[in-house]
Length: 586
Image (cartoon, rainbow, N blue to C red):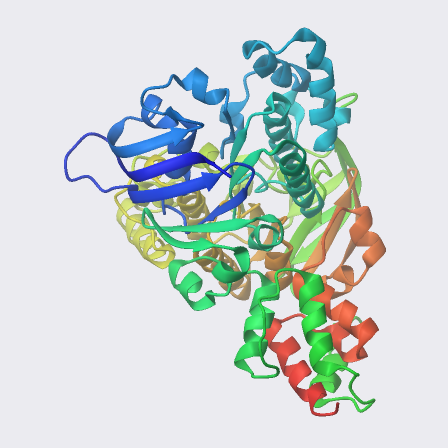
């Protein structure tokens, strides 16, 4: 099989000044036609720059110092026109709003098809099949401005699928998608590869999906290729990946931990839940005895203390709240929600369920048409947004919409100064937070990677020390190290007494950090409860298009197959400890 992408010693530096830092350095990469490649690495590693070199955006759009050669389907990207390259390579950008050119979904797909001269007899079929492929046929005539972030992401993906290019390059295509939709996109891409021989290159943080679907994983670090190989081989290098700042799938953490504990010999990396289940079952076959282990007893004895009275102050008080964007548009209704000081609540559910609308009711940007919303005792309908902002700070889904200053320090200090804090103490506080987040103080936020811009926006929220922190997809676009920094900071703010409400599609993050889950579907809040209990409700998860986190999902399978103690396990370390104890009774 021949290579459709060939990169020979490619180096690139933004700007033309000699001595500037290289975003890419000596990249040698050949990608065979019909392969599914996952491209991972920490924020700022050069992943998006590499994608720009493949799509021809470098050198035709981004200027700088370029060395080496990139060939796409035989075309040298320096010599071929961007139009000719675009006929071979389709791309989905990280900023989907920047990619939209039409106001209506159907017109967005039609634009590319007409510009590329697709025969009019094919256009209808292509539009219908592309919309169906990502599950948004019902949005065909909707205005793009009325869609949620996840729905816009699906429109961008379907617009590229309709063009049927030989190569698709996608930059974080699932960052705004619910778990079911994210898996659905991967399924669509795999089918396209199998049916048409399409080559797929994905920049992605969802390592579990990459491990399951990709033929090859390429790890980029500081502009160079650090690792390159089959998913099992790359993700087995857990220590190397952690040092770089890249996550590994929980299933591989399980198999690696079992190997380290020497519970069995010749452990292969577990890329899927099925493989992890088979691994544990093989260790415990023909099955443990009926004697409960100490770990099991401890797990079964845990309680969420339903009968206890929670005396923590109520920060969020929502009763019967409703809001509609207009006839035929999205709406939410009948929302009852209470969030207390020190609580981390995650709002989960499918794209378009109303999650972001609910957060806008909480910060006062929208006023309820029915019911009431009170934040720290203040009724949002009667309180100016500027006053609410002193009590409730928000990180929006797109960080670029809340960045406005020339340097990181100025950005972080800006909110404090707006609240009347003196300039120098504000700057000092900003420096402390920038150091904690590992952010460059004097850099322009707009020159940072998408993940780093997200960190700057969150840092400006944390600096305010509000009573309520509202986060809309706080880990979107972040690498593993940044994600842990962000969420540990959020946890510390909760421990200090802040209430935290976050919209999040990463169920592993939700499982690790959220105390409570609020499940939304079709504009209604259908369940609020402890995370463990919600994740145990299979019917609810399916209805809300939520995928249970890896370890609880595996624990449920193992409880049914091997021992009930597995049903309460939520951490990799606890699962491995339980396997070790139960193995002693085999």
